Length: 85
Image (cartoon, rainbow, N blue to C red; front, top):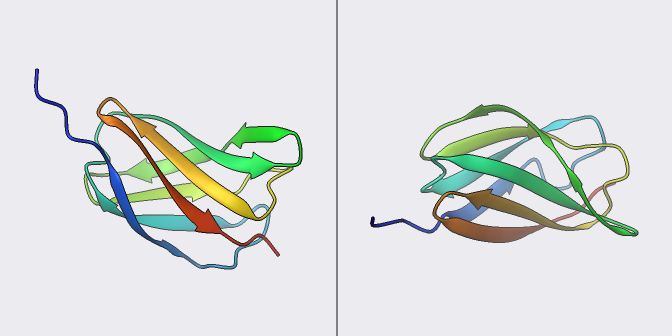
């Protein structure tokens, strides 16, 4: 089976705050497994409110700090930097 690796081209807003919803734009977001945010001790899972092939909306979870957002789908993973203020 052919799998397409996701690619994140932007995150908005950036910077974002804990509890806010950010929009990730890119490609190949089908089959979302998890969206992880950097924390001081590793990562924490964000809550996805909607997702499509080109866009994901996810709530910034408690404990998230500036670092990366990592999206994992059935096709692979992609990361993008984010500032949490």
